[in-house]
Image 1 (spheres, rainbow, N blue to C red):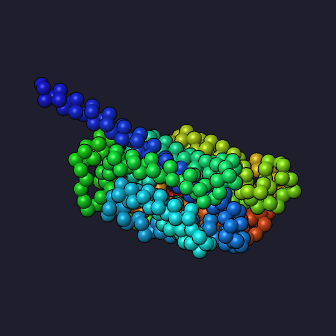
Image 2: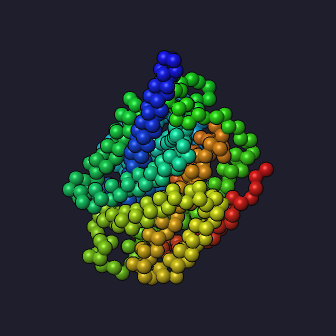
Image 3: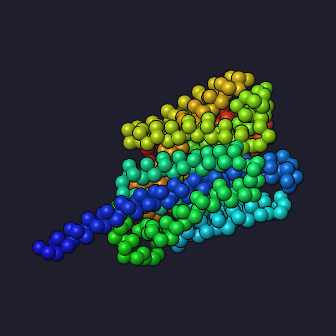
Length: 428
């Protein structure tokens, strides 16, 4: 009788402990996502002041943004096998330590080549974060609904990082300078999750293919959600990854490119400097506009995805919102001369685009679709595609006028619709 009571009390203890692990994991990974968001959007704010100090050309300024996206997207392919061999937690810990070091290095570089090299290094570090965070959360989440919420909050945290970067840049960049600005905006969001991961959070149970985890980790993970040995055929996993990548390429490239069009629209428009602060002497003002217009729309779309997930089948959801995106791109092209209306349509696009973006992230880290063997591969390739499409969108938005860029984006979005329909094809 006493042993039954003791076992029951132990079970209750571990269930409560497991829930704490879930929530602490969510907080830690969201803070890490905020830091990642800061680092990705940082070049948009520091470009002009760093250009004045280091004497950068427009091509060199654009290269600072491209460096992070390209190095992140390429490095992820090399990092994917490491998380299976070494575990999620050691990789996340190492990436957070390196993030702090590389961020400080970015702030003290003496010339352009050093700054470009530091941004390339930062992309390598972010690749570790991107290839590990969602998989870790998928393996430690107690239910599908909790995991879907973690994806939504992670995307929200990403935009909070961009917003934090824009607000601090708008109000304090001129006073503190771009070097101190880099340190102040980034490092706090790496230190806190570093402490949590170091002293509180366990390894996820199924992350090691050829190793063991400690007893407490096994107990907490098994109470959170037993990871079954879900085997998925390689051919089927590759077909699903191909569908996700094709959908992302045609739909994410125009979406990310549209965000990067804002400075071009502001620069080419006839609005005066006292209207919406579009033509401020620093990029922080333009970036604050991006934050307000796009952040609200995208964050709203995140929660729309949370509400619709499970109520609409993924093929229906992806196809419907692809069609809505085509309509919005065509409307933006038709009213491209009206700058204020164009910004409103861009904000609406963020809401519409956020839903399939989150749905694709959920699909890419779904254990029932990819099993334990291909989970990290699908998540890593999804994040690599995200970064590489961001780089492509950046190039398109920079090398041609925003009216021509909108025409290209309409073509991409139109091709993205059949990519969404491919999810209806039955897999054998």
